[in-house]
Amino acid sequence: MFKKKIDRAFDQLKEDQQPEFNEEDYRNSMQDEMEKGDFLALVLGTYRFFLPVFIVIVLLLVILSRL
Image (cartoon, rainbow, N blue to C red; front, side):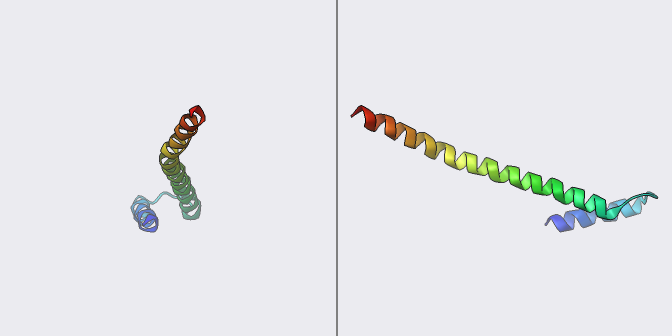
Protein backbone atom coordinates (compact mmCIF):
# COMPACT_ATOMS: atom_id res chain seq x y z
CA MET A 1 0.00 0.00 0.00
CA PHE A 2 2.69 2.49 0.98
CA LYS A 3 4.92 1.29 -1.84
CA LYS A 4 2.31 2.31 -4.41
CA LYS A 5 1.93 5.74 -2.80
CA ILE A 6 5.68 6.25 -2.82
CA ASP A 7 5.95 5.13 -6.44
CA ARG A 8 3.16 7.53 -7.46
CA ALA A 9 4.96 10.34 -5.65
CA PHE A 10 8.16 9.51 -7.54
CA ASP A 11 6.35 9.48 -10.84
CA GLN A 12 4.98 12.94 -10.08
CA LEU A 13 8.42 14.18 -9.05
CA LYS A 14 10.07 12.75 -12.16
CA GLU A 15 7.66 14.77 -14.28
CA ASP A 16 8.84 17.91 -12.46
CA GLN A 17 12.45 16.65 -12.49
CA GLN A 18 14.74 18.81 -10.40
CA PRO A 19 18.47 18.55 -11.10
CA GLU A 20 19.64 17.52 -7.59
CA PHE A 21 16.90 15.16 -6.45
CA ASN A 22 18.07 12.05 -4.59
CA GLU A 23 15.38 9.41 -4.94
CA GLU A 24 16.86 7.03 -2.36
CA ASP A 25 17.00 9.65 0.41
CA TYR A 26 13.46 10.73 -0.36
CA ARG A 27 12.21 7.12 -0.28
CA ASN A 28 13.96 6.47 3.05
CA SER A 29 12.56 9.62 4.65
CA MET A 30 9.03 8.80 3.45
CA GLN A 31 9.34 5.27 4.82
CA ASP A 32 10.60 6.57 8.18
CA GLU A 33 7.66 8.98 8.45
CA MET A 34 5.19 6.19 7.68
CA GLU A 35 6.78 3.90 10.27
CA LYS A 36 6.49 6.64 12.90
CA GLY A 37 2.83 7.05 11.99
CA ASP A 38 2.29 3.29 12.26
CA PHE A 39 3.90 3.24 15.70
CA LEU A 40 1.76 6.15 16.87
CA ALA A 41 -1.38 4.38 15.64
CA LEU A 42 -0.31 1.24 17.52
CA VAL A 43 0.25 3.17 20.75
CA LEU A 44 -3.07 5.01 20.47
CA GLY A 45 -4.91 1.79 19.67
CA THR A 46 -3.38 0.08 22.67
CA TYR A 47 -4.25 3.06 24.86
CA ARG A 48 -7.87 3.05 23.70
CA PHE A 49 -8.17 -0.67 24.44
CA PHE A 50 -6.37 -0.88 27.79
CA LEU A 51 -7.61 2.34 29.39
CA PRO A 52 -11.17 1.04 29.97
CA VAL A 53 -9.78 -2.32 31.12
CA PHE A 54 -7.50 -0.57 33.60
CA ILE A 55 -10.36 1.61 34.88
CA VAL A 56 -12.57 -1.45 35.40
CA ILE A 57 -9.82 -3.25 37.31
CA VAL A 58 -9.24 -0.24 39.56
CA LEU A 59 -12.98 0.12 40.21
CA LEU A 60 -13.28 -3.57 41.08
CA LEU A 61 -10.36 -3.30 43.49
CA VAL A 62 -11.91 -0.27 45.17
CA ILE A 63 -15.31 -1.94 45.46
CA LEU A 64 -13.85 -5.21 46.75
CA SER A 65 -11.66 -3.43 49.29
CA ARG A 66 -14.73 -1.76 50.81
CA LEU A 67 -16.48 -5.09 51.39
